[in-house]
Length: 602
Ligand SMILES: Cc1ncc(C[n+]2csc(CCOP(=O)(O)OP(=O)(O)O)c2C)c(N)n1
Ligand SMILES: [Mg+2]
Image 1 (cartoon, rainbow, N blue to C red):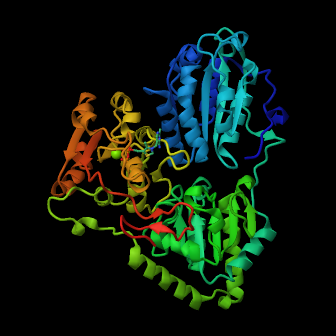
Image 2: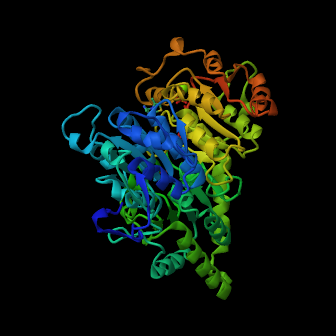
Image 3: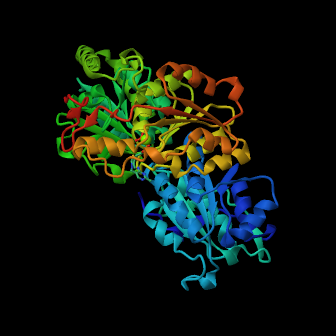
């Protein structure tokens, strides 16, 4: 990410002479209002109390009281992922700030715009190991896009404006604003004027792609015989899904998505190959491996995609579109780099493609593309995912986790906002829930944070109270932030939770089965799990349980029935603990090297 040097910033803030006098605490909340912020997810404590008092005295910005600061940041994050707006959270100093760190790192790894405001001990106590002092700017430095320590009450409006600007522009990311208690002192009142805009000399995110590079990319596309579009989360963050879909359809190129990109191309479109990478589909990984031209957009060649980079897509010439120049050729060298936001770059490419095809419709090698699509269909028929597995299962056999996701897909007509935690259930959800729309699949891809699912679902539900929001979780992950069931009670948040309960840290267990001779070191705990139905009932929610396949569809439908429209429902489904996620990349191989089942490999 490009470095930001705030000392070079200038703002358009008008002269302060006729401005209203506010305390620092009031300024922070007023700035949030001026940014159009609806919700602040947070938890109070000593260093933040002046700010909390300012919250009490207004109605414009609603504060959501969580039960753990990690969850506050995940809620803001879920809100941001679903809406495209910047999420906000507020924590106190010391333990409040350190509890927020996992949430900040999660957002950082997935380029999610957040502003995290942390209380700090008073300026004269900083550096004295005073009560609840921690160096938040220092601790968070490697996992933020930028951070600010407020030095005076006067500078609050400008710093807040910059924080939102930096968080949401270019490659988005979390920004920390650390606020010493004395600068929010209610007796110190200073003029408040919120800047309309901000100019920062050292931070100028690119607005468009270079036209020469775009021309080169289009020239390359027309040489393709075996093309693939590889689209990631940057397409979603850059609101480029419509441009991407139009371009793919114009060219009739197949599309694969990263875990973070799911939904940016309609999953039910026949050109869609499914997810690629570690647990990607056979046809997506084979198509990538055999491609001659790849258009990578908003994707960063993560190791969960490339497997061994030296064996990655040996025949492919690659176009890489990314707003962050630092990601280009970082892992895999590319033929045509284009630095710029996905939307305008794809639009420019589309216009040029149309213009060139208008002049010469023979530019696309339709015959070669027809053969390529046929080859992909053969791969899919040979080893593609089975999207209706119920017929495979004998009566009385344990429920397969894939079938739970398939039942969820049907019960929600494929239209739900689905958040997940981390593990096998996450991969099954990514493989078997078909996202036709952007921003509906919300998960921690980069950091892989267990405990993300429930709070992020809550953030989505706050943003879209009338939409169906489901958290697909595992009995391991849900226990990492289960205390937020209480927050759901307080705010009457009717999220739905589907617990794919294999009584184990399933993904860990799978690796132990495959790589450690089946030695399940510290990955099982079946005798100590809570009765989830009773547990959620104790919070005032509805708990349902399914242990037999015959009951699954009916109970799943009940979860989403009108009867429970306004209730949080927790569905605990006992699934086969021995099931593995396949395909699975074979470590150190090419993308075409996959385990396809417990007994087959590609
Ligand atoms: C905070 C955190 N700790 C540890 C891990 C490592 N880890 C990845 S998946 C997993 C198991 C998750 O278990 P569960 O939530 O039950 O999901 P399952 O794999 O069984 O579907 C673990 C421990 C992690 N991703 N996040
Ligand atoms: Mg589990």
